[in-house]
Length: 241
Image (cartoon, rainbow, N blue to C red):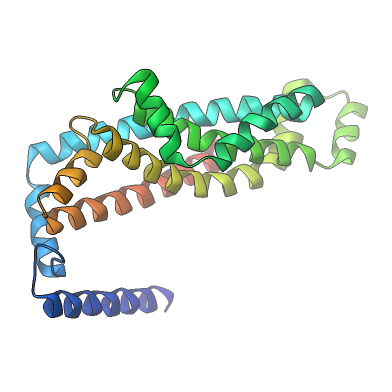
C-alpha cells in the first residue's frame, strides 16, 4: 500500500510537470517529462555517459570514504581527550557553518579543479561522522564499560561489544544524511570548478546552452545514484556491524 501511494504521488507530480511544460510552450526552458525520459534513454546507450558517471562517482565516493575515516578518528579523539574535543570542535563548527561554495572557491584557489570534488566531499562528511562517533561514545552505557573491566575484556572486545554498539545508531543516522549531502556538494564543486568529464560540467553546459532536457536528465541520474549509494552504505554498515 505504501509503495502504491508513493507511485501515485510521483504520477501526480509528473502530470503537474507536463501541464507546466505545455503552459510555457518552451522546451528550452522547461522540457516535458516525455522529452526528458527520451533524452535520458539516449544518454544511457552511450559510452560517454558511463565514463562521466564513473569519474564523478569515484571522486565523490573516495572523498566520502576519506571523510568517514577522518571523522571516525576525530570523533574518537574528541571523546577521549578534552583538549582535542575543544580544538577539533572549532574546526567541526567551521565546516558546519561556512557555506559549501566558500570552501569550493578556497579549494580552487589553493589546489585547482583537479582535486576539488574529492576534498569538498570529504569536508562535508567529516563534521557529521565526527559528531556521530563522539555522541555515540559519550552516550555509551557506563555500566557496560564497568562490566567489561570486571570481566577483564580485551580492548578489542570492549570496542566491539560495548562502544560499537553505542556508536552504531548515531553513525548510521549521520551516514544517511552524509550520503545525500556528499553528492550535492560534490556535484556543486564540479559545476563551479568545471571539472573535466564530470556530471557537474555536463549540467553547467546544459545550463549555458539552455538544454533543459539534458539538465533534468543529469539531475535524475544524480538523485537515483545518490539513493542507491545511500542504501548500499547503510547495508554495508549493517553487515560490518
